[in-house]
Length: 344
Image 1 (spheres, helix red, strand yellow):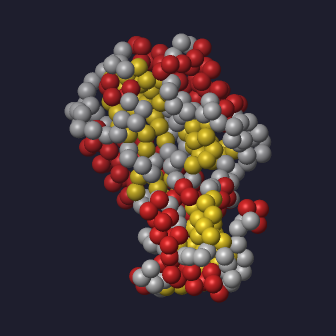
Image 2 (cartoon, one colour):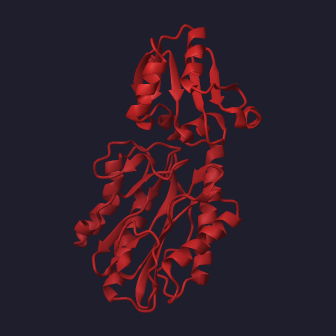
Image 3 (cartoon, rainbow, N blue to C red):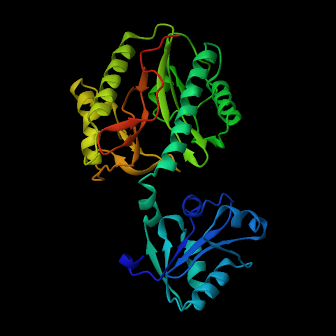
């Protein structure tokens, strides 16, 4: 805040609110001044919030939240307030501006997110648990998937498996993409019936104790087109090469090239249209980015995905993904599901 000349900061993002306070309720704001840390919420959470947010002064806000904020700012003679521009719509901003007069509003971006990029040991412990649950779910999937079932039927079974083992939900809409649909990088589960002699891509994760995992594996049912086995081997080579060479100090661009250069060398560069990976944490997509446009520098404590893919329209596609922790020396791989070409 000092470096940006801010007297106070209002945090409205639900994820950032939980990160800063530990409060899991569905409503509230965090107000940070030079002297105090406030958690503002409504009457529904006045018992829960103090229990979950030690170190914060929990305040029940009025019918108009900004009137309560204005009162707190006045108590400390605060005349300028930073707000999270990436999480506030224009209409909400106009409400802030009107109700907080004469306080000056200053848009800021990524202040809490920059803190979230580096995970501490407690966070990594939870992320390992979320990754373990994803691995368990994949092993479960191998036992239930078969021709004749629909993608959405498999998706539902996966969701139930994770929920029964403590997950709040899946990390995102689960992708179960079979046959020609495996060429859709984000082919969420549909009513398509899984056939024989085709690939199936599973991309899913567990949201567990506030943190996400993100795992992708591609398997075969029957005897798919030999071309699909060829691209599987290329994607696996690219992924393993990246895992072997990615390290702290690299830029996202350099990390992306580890996978992209191999896929391009085999002539499939145009069929790899997304980035090699992304940051992972309380949200499934966080900083840093592992893309050909990214100058983000990888640092110890960052958790990122490594997920190259090849997608050929009308034929099928392959993606293989693991979650890793960047360390001072090398990496630690959180996910451990097998990557050998699996044929059911």
